[in-house]
Amino acid sequence: MKIWDNATIQRDKTVIVIGPNGSGKTKYGIRLSQMNNADHIGALRNIALQENLPTWTVRQAETAVKNQLNSQKSSYWEISNEIDALFAKLMADDSASAVRYRNSRALGNQPDIETTRIMELQRLWERIFPRRHISFEGYAPRVSSEYMVGEYAARYMSDGERVALYLAARVLDSTAEYIIVDEPEVHFHSKLAAAFWDYLEEQRPKMKFVYITHDLEFALSRNNPVFLMVKPNETPVVVEKASDIPKSTAMDLLAGASLSIFARRIVFCEGTATGSYDFAILSAWFDDRLTALIPLSSCKNVVEAVLAYKRTDIIQNVEVLGIIDQDYRSVQAVDAVKNDVFVLPLHEVESMLLIESVVVRLSVELGRNVSDAQLLFKELSDQTKTVYSKDILNKTASERFKKEIEFSLNYKLRGLKASVDSATQKETHVQAVSSAGGDASALYDQIYSEVTEVFEKPYLDILKILPGKPLLAALSKKLGVEAPVLVGLLCKLVKVSDPEIIASMSQLLPNRVFRETAGPQPSATA
Image (cartoon, rainbow, N blue to C red; front, side):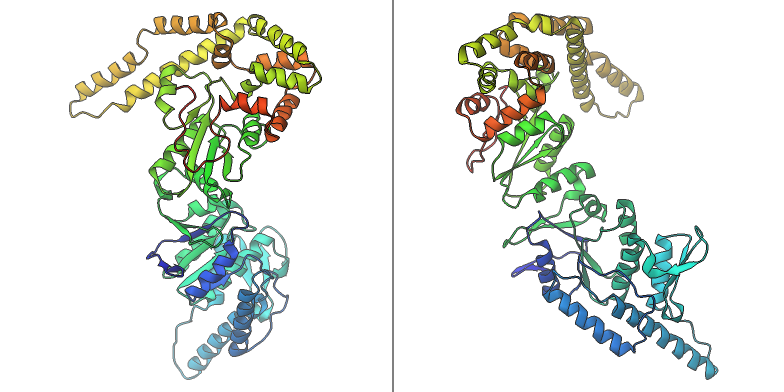
């Protein structure tokens, strides 16, 4: 299959064309169809059948369909209108078959009934939409359903039913080696889209399907697909190993690869795109044309996405970076991941609002003079012992203890191997679990001491070990504004490149602007 001027791929696999908005996927799909003499189904399509189909000859209908499709290829931004001619062609073929059968019987023969494309279409549509029947008798397509009394014209079907009928008709009518489908999932529920195209691929096993889609879930539902990542005026990048990693992680990576036309660095972070302090603050920080920020909800997802990137070729010619909070992690756990992701040297992203230079700058922005702002910070730092109640300290110690045991246990279990001797296997497995916690009592005492004695250490150690939210609430009260307002103000100052804020946050975060020669970013805990 030819994919560019001098580039081809030798593939029997399904091909998925993917890329960001504005990358020219639709235009590329037209070019792809021209290079490979393929049929093309555009994203803009009329799916409304007339109540009565035209009664044309086969030749008339074939000519009308061909003219409509050629027109659509040269004006791909307009709605395709070949549906009436297409169904007139299918009906003309069906009628011609019926006439041949009748004439043969009249001569005393016993011919087999031909399976026409209209018959194939009826069977497939009714398989997709069980307990419903579609009839084309008398050139008047009508639907009956076990869910309601009576019949109704096919033009009054739901969008999903109509698009399924249209798309199936296009595929069943095609004799091309390749068929290119732009936005195959439109009007379908995600599971229905996957099942529908499974059925069509099953009906046309020799046809090679090419899908142009934004829907990563649908893309990954195809059987072992190969991806073409499209960017403007560039040879598409061929990606073959998406099937080697978990589907959810592949979706994250593909989203990253297709997020920005200009991205040269992709940053995965915790949190969500809405209502998340993490994403809001990091979006302001990485406000760089060459950097795309993708929230993946949890630390685990961030680490998995970065590791998957290193194992596969889903994202090419792009630097990938993961950022996670210090959270309740043990020193061992941080050391284990810091070569793969950037570990923030604070308990959480919002703790950045509690650094002295940031508190002073926010206070000044809210109307206080520098001396008052410095005094306010001193009062805040002196209050830490009272802000963090015993309940918070106990929870912190508990969470850190659990994280330590969890890390140790995972480490031990990874080293376990099956043995031919069942007794030996039992001994090694039980011993690994038993030794994971070591002296659990001593470990707990050590962690509890670290947590409760943190107030005797420098202020930044408090922000590293204890969650920032209680102290942020105390700061909000002193300043007379809610925490979201403070986060918004910090983001505003970052976006205008306030010198004091940028200098402070530069000590805690990776390079704000992508640099071609920056190379891997070390953890701030190193």
